[in-house]
Length: 343
Image (cartoon, rainbow, N blue to C red; front, side, top):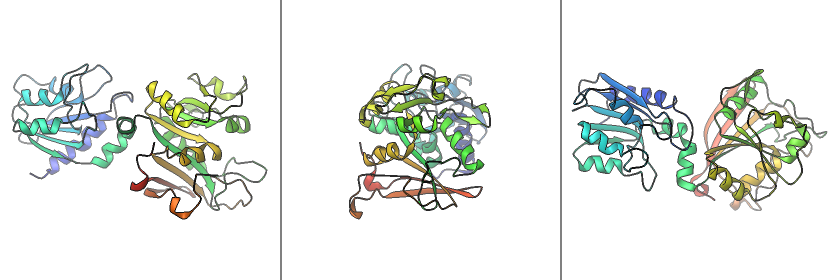
């Protein structure tokens, strides 16, 4: 049975609800319960680790038996395991849900398989509705589940001829106000912002996420990678979160430690050397390249050695979107299939 227009609208609403939940070790998930006639009976979302999952949150707002014959529209496949809470697939089945429409499969070895369990119980199940939007919402969690490390976004700003700064080292500002505001919004959506010691010493960045002079509600934790010392008076030491320092060039170890601390998404913004190191190691899931219509020339390139000595070794990308930002252009891309999953 094809997904109906009412179910599509319910999925859009479920994604809005999911975004209300906190980012953390659990995915953001939203759910809408529809009556057999297509009316909204209840809504729910996951409020954080240890709380009821979205489906159960929605079901809890209904009287016993009120969900019989209804449809559950959920942004992630109902889970199939017992952790701090019970399996959502069982809760839906016991509530009498007749149909489930969800966006993304659960990649977890223990938690996946809810759809199969529901089908085995005679519940109609449809998967894949608005999967791209759902993936974008929880891409950090999905990467963590699949690769056992945080989702890594590598960002840089460059001139049209691929330079990150003028020959004297000045770089503020290559891009315009709209592009810089976009960067701050994307910083705020990450758990951590990662820079190298070279950037700290050269630019003294605050590493906050701001709207003008106002701090945005969610602040990424500042992370500094490199062997040089960060001065005691550095601006990042006044960040709302205490910075983390890694005196190592082993990026796998850095990401492993961040993952162990519960970080699921990191925003690498720390200059050509560090950005290139992440790319060379294959430790990136998204690229944000802000391109300004300006020519700088010289040797201050936006990327340095990314581990490519011949064209056959190139890091092939798939462009997801081109976003105009005032006079600038943002390219959003991810590794092409042959590069995906590198660790």
